[in-house]
Image (cartoon, rainbow, N blue to C red; front, side):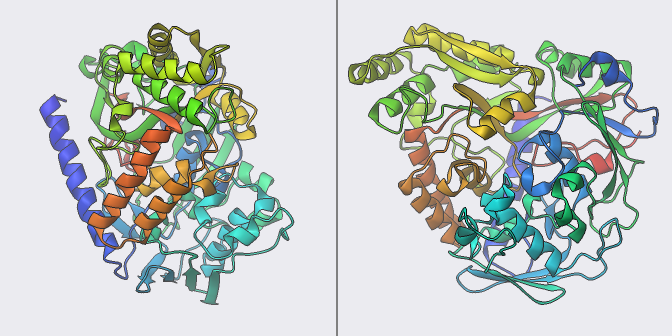
Length: 557
């Protein structure tokens, strides 16, 4: 795809999302959203060639929506479950289980009417109680769900975070006047709440899940377009069509086989040979050639995935103080993002200019305040590093941890070389064998270095980047704020944005919040991943949604 075509596609998508956001913010009674262990296993996972085979990584833990914040599990969960609302590939809103969503005047209370007739694949009806029970379970600290902070704006959340809380305690802000009415009372205004309902953490679970949640995660029962068939760990997950599904995502194939790869080149070779149908990312070895390769069908368009690396405040020299702030800014300015995107990725990524992506209406091409901290400036970086050394001399080395099974070595090496050459310090990558290996250390807060991080959009709003990744309520294991960043100023501005029902004013507050992030740099923004994917030549109807992922239900061959 030419540069002009990419710009046109990006502009059209942005216009759609802006229109979508505007529709959602008038608060109408409609919903706004949300590598194998060895090469042989990668090429012989399933004998059923009628299934659509796609690449994946081994999920970090069981397939539980509220306990999953990585894509190995997320790719599967999105098709096993359905929520109150959804977005399609074109950005159109759909009411799914919800029949209507009606807010009060200040966006602190929502009355949600549910459609009758929805069922889980075990035959249990999906009711208002299904959502209320699931959300309370996810919010209760005793259940240690990784996305619990997604419920932090619902009344009663803080009480459920008390370490001494009853494991069966529920969110006081949820009520079910009848089986098909869910009333949600918030502890503060949140005009984006209808949009957030598309997030997978808010998918409903059947009652059987709460009897043994770990067992359930190994063989989940959902209400989505597909139902679970099997999971061979470190090999594959197979899902098949759910004939009783009542939502908008119609299934056009016989099922999906998610194959686990630990080597991107092996997956790409399988596509070339016709042994893998779809690969949603391109290995470094093929970045410069995949668009001209006649052995595959190539896909390239603007994307929403945000890539960065986190420097935890608990690391020496990087505390929440003047020294730590100076060092973060120096490291950010030492990175020539444009050069890496061009030389390493052949312009299949877009250098970050803020903490979101071009596919949300609140995207900022240039932050007026502190935006220069995201630009390459070697002389300024050296100056800031020198100031930090005057406070406390640098000691030790700088390392960026990454999973070797995800194709990150090239960029980590390039970034570390730039940091090393500019700041004259020992900087290098620190590889872990698999994604799960590094994520477990990040989750347990045992990792002792900086580490790569990425975020795929869950629904088209800046809130989906800013709240789960940087809000204080998302720190300390309650969300995806893996560096445990906490800023009263940022939280205040974020809350002000969420209270705004006017799109322009909300965007202004989001921008102010981003300017705080650009100063503090809880993560070092790098770039947004464009869609860069391939399929076998006999595969048809492959499209990509706002998450950068294929719409698996539409794929045929």
